[in-house]
Image (tube, rainbow, N blue to C red; front, side):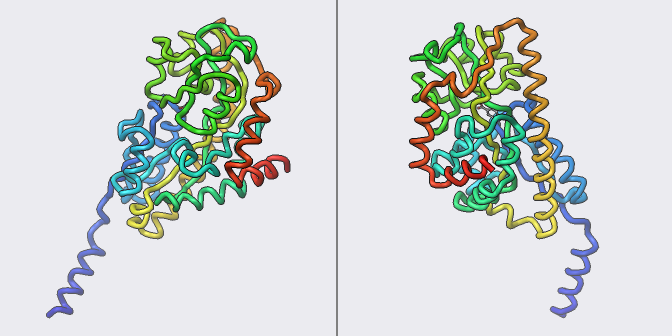
Amino acid sequence: MKQSLAILALALATALPAVAEEYRLGLITPPSHQWTKTAETIAEDVAAATDGRVELLVMPSGQLGNEARMLQQLQTGAIDFAMLTAAEFANRDPDFGIFYAPYIVEDIEGAGRLLSGDVAHTLLGRMSDFGLHGLAWGTAGMRQVVTRDEAETVEDLSGLRIRTVPLAPEMDFWREAGAVATPMPLPALYDAFANGQVDAMQIDHEGTWNSGYWRHASTILDSRHMMFPMAAVASGRKWQVLTEEDRATVAQIFDERIAEMVDLYAEIDETNLENLRDTGLPVLSVGRDWFGLAVDAWYEDWREKAPLLADLEAEAAR
Ligand code: BEZ
């Protein structure tokens, strides 16, 4: 009797279509941002490739909380996937801060090479230290500077409150450059800049254009001084719930779509820079020398803090 019930249960399980599971994917970027658009494409691809078994519900604009909160929720399995800046990781383990090394790459192509290189691969594996499964490294546009008042030299930024991501390597850089690093998550930035709570911001051309920060700006510094890594991760707990086949499918889709996104950023930066030039605002191109001793000072400090930086520098030099 027991055996025939078991056979019946097995027959029913194989006859019934698999139940669709909905998984939540959180980000802090708004719907207009490329990270969110890529997340939407990933969700469509995953649903199609798993015959609807895995449905990703994309939740942008910090709907699931800030990144610190999202990390906690990923760790407990309360949310399933996220596309995050490296801030929360870098603040806990300095090795995760090394991609913010100033002028370690010249452009998005260089960023793409390092984000798919050996060091990046090692760091993706170390996401398990945070209870996560690392899926892929991506990037946003190169970092630039936008100021409320006119600025021509780095001395013009001295003592100004410059918005950074709440992230040790960015804040250290601006302290070395003589500004007052003012950490602020993306969703709070528009009002703070418009109201003068910050005098300047570190951001990318995409945000400056799409979110309209330029409307309150006097100068745009096309400095390209850092890349801006993005980590696509799954909750370690929830990753185990997927079948091996679905894990392979999901991992491949994240990998491919995020690699495409990284390539796209060269164009996104250029298009938005053109848009910004068309506003008539002064756009100054500045390079490593413009920052004086700040870049070298940053490296001195961070070579001590983050053992993996030396490996990344060697990889960048190859
Ligand atoms: C920022 O906080 O500057 C930022 C966050 C995510 C994507 C791009 C920029």
